[in-house]
Image (tube, rainbow, N blue to C red; front, side, top):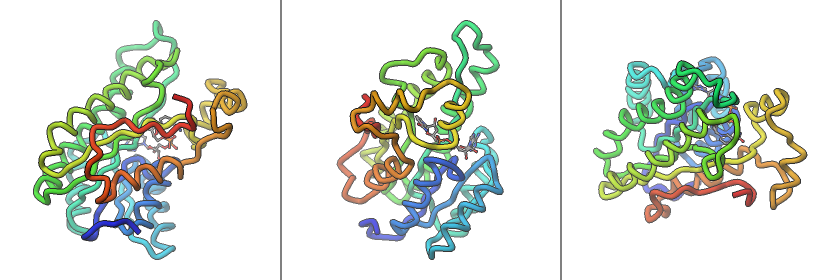
Length: 250
Ligand SMILES: NC(=O)c1ccc[n+]([C@@H]2O[C@H](COP(=O)([O-])OP(=O)(O)OC[C@H]3O[C@@H](n4cnc5c(N)ncnc54)[C@H](O)[C@@H]3O)[C@@H](O)[C@H]2O)c1
């Protein structure tokens, strides 16, 4: 259980799979009512159902984070069913491996739209609830690729670097009103997205393990544990931080 003085409601985007699913499960175990927003509405509801089956609270909703009207509608549904969402985890994301000179502007915009603008929309829709309550926690999932850059990932790394900047800015703007904003840049976490990158030849798992100081691959639960901590009441003095959870890779 978390140390929240009051019951909390959390929105986790991209919560039907991988890191978002582990975060949803963890926050629900911590005592939050969790709303899973995902492009795959059926998977979101299936994930929520596994959370309810162990006695915790969750709902799964179809939400495309690029669709502002749908986000507003879904946040309204969450507020009606559970109460005002005061925790927001911006996790939905799309990878992109394309040589720089071959990236079309259309592709760049698609990646920015999900990875950056989607988080921007969710923050703008959920923040008024946090400000009214005088308490809020925003955790943005960026990427360790922002530390060093990664060849063939210019669109993705640009979008995730912007997320780190958004995190810093929101932390300065809203910390005086009780809302902390932090980012977790994961590295090399065993999820469907990462496995697809390995199958596609964009990543060598064994080579990555060999260069990871803790000598193992990260698990979604590693990110969920850090996210859970940042959402606690006792984390109120931590804001604007980019907390690497990466086995020491950065
Ligand atoms: N796995 C890693 O090693 C790693 C490393 C760095 C960063 N990340 C980031 O972590 C986050 C989660 O990645 P993951 O590895 O768990 O991937 P994943 O593919 O397992 O899960 C991503 C989820 O996001 C959902 N999604 C995609 N586009 C969406 C949209 N427009 N609206 C709503 N939902 C959408 C997908 O349906 C899926 O359920 C992503 O932002 C990713 O960039 C992952």
